[in-house]
Image 1: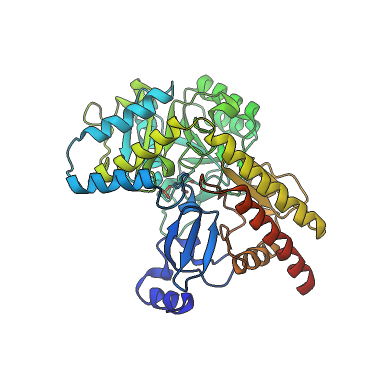
Image 2: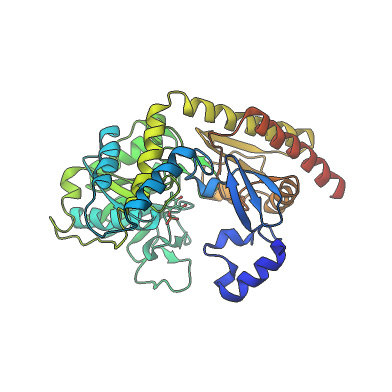
Length: 429
Ligand code: PLP
């Protein structure tokens, strides 16, 4: 069966042929490849073609595909039973690893996806602050729960408008949109809605409008504004946690959040995510407190075991992030040089093992800047790279990831492919 045939078949039985929209390659055109298996830094499609994988399941696989230690931990856990819906030791072990690592994490709770982590963090933040208003930032993605699926209205400080069908206007009534890296836009919302804003959620390193890090001073202002107006600050580290560094985004800004969300890497490739933070906030959760939150598969032992294996490996490897950052920088410098040789302007960003590139001559500090990128050129580049065996995120507004099994030779292979890709694009117009 070819990739094309398999995707046609998938579309007969699965909505859009995929279980998460970006996988359909809609924004770059063409069809997705259908994955057969992965090994280390590489994936193989059902036609037997090999690709250097810069998606790594959208972040979780910091040790690449089929890491022997994670695989072993999962197999051992499977032998003991897939799920109990009751307390196990592995939950506490993983919780302890996280709480001991981060000074602002007194307690956490596990869930199965990043969407649940942010949704639940917001609920407990509102339950604690007793205020319904929530500030989120244009271009930040926190999963697909209703209250967070909004885009900018006519101004940053207006009420949110639902940007997905099926989201009632009433549900986003309490969501206020601010501009990333613009503290004045946040202050204006606080000032014009006295006593209403109970929580602020932000990706401290935005990875869902492409890679756009928040400025340190901006995050410090956010902390000060939350303190001044009595709002809970939630840093969404579902993507940046254990990706930007072993302490997530923290070393880049030093701002301690009231609540933090995790996902992706903490499950080692399995379905685990978490939210956690200050004791007095987390104690508002049921059964101790009045804020309800639950999950049949939350703290699943297989996922916990995979997470323990991944985080233990991270804790044991001293120069992991230096190695990964070196690879990501080498890749971005290579892409930039290849683009410039072809007369194409490219903006690049690196944070630890995360990288991003924008086809625009202008600096990208927020969502509006990101939207000015040349998405047609991006699509051509993406297709030309895929043809050459390099699997990049199929959207200008996603982040790329390097993984531990990657070598400098792998990166040079991708850079060489980029050079050829830009030449091909120039030739074909
Ligand atoms: N928060 C951030 C920052 C994310 O990047 C994502 C997903 O990419 C989510 C939340 C949602 O996580 P999930 O897809 O596991 O629901």
